[in-house]
Length: 459
Image (tube, rainbow, N blue to C red; front, top):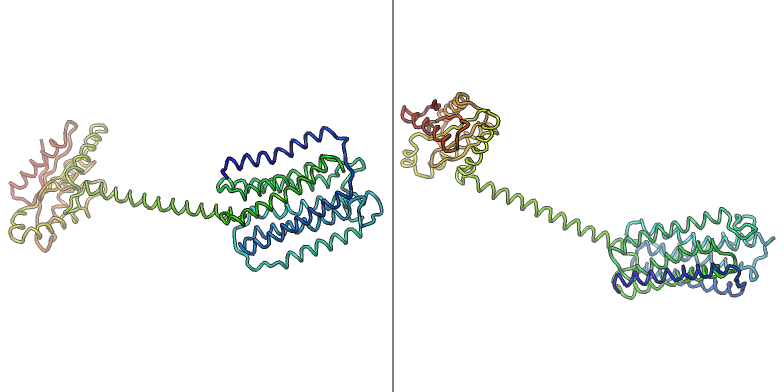
């Protein structure tokens, strides 16, 4: 049965009693005082409630779901309280009351209490966690039935213990109204909670439960607006019995189909949400891994494979940004062009692997001594370039001298290596090419005048 079909069935089933009620309400003077029929009708209703309670317990034995055990408790209470209600039917009562007022109070009290009782056991079904309870036996159900029967007998022997239920004009007292309102509120909350579950996992068994509880919630309202033995009063009895039958049919359907157990829907929702959360976590992890891989690939696109310094492409990009900042904010920036002295001799003497190791260690030594804002890149071969934001030519020259002295004072791959450095400050009219070209001229001068020195471009 599709979701739409289930909704149509529910709407039709719930609207028919409403239309009947409105029709019968227009005939307030029509009544049918039939105590014998009421007696047998309510006894049969109580028997059906006890059958549903028994069947619910058998279903609990199969599923070990606490919700379905509470359903059995609710219907055990109905069967006892409603049966007492039948046996004190005015005109067929097996108990003698001191007055008609006491009789009416007791009669209506047990009817109202049967509905309040089941509503009290529907509420926890919608909030408790799904767990297995294998230790709950049939014994507590018997104890509950015996206790309720004992309390009922005690109250019947003490008629003055019953609260006032009806006024002399036949209307409900405040106690009766409050009892009915609490019953309706609890049942409406239950319907809302189970409807939330049905929307996520629609199935006929759960829809039967929704229809049954909705009819049950209409019953106290119809009783409240009815007069004893009136047509709407009888309609309320029919609604009550019909709610039992529909809930029982839903339970039977669930057991027969073995697809979605009657009260497992919230557990299935939880499992579905857990699956969604797991999938979400897996997607987030995959996304993080993808981002990390993307970042790694992006980094590889701008990193020199051998030395780990940035490549020329990345330097050009950063240098262009720095030129824009120089032009916009008129601050200073310089580049330092570095060349390893006599590097060809290192390669020819020790081999290219040794030369590569020298390049790697040189980059590591420089990176350990530059600022976070500086950009070290491989310019080509044994040449490297450093972008130094916010440094003038003189300041960058001092920094370059520190690097020169550092390299001159250490061994790279157990070899004494020196470097020559050319420094040039950025002009507002510069391009990357013109800027680095001046640093290259300064570097050429450093190499031409003895190497292992720093020359700042002046011009």
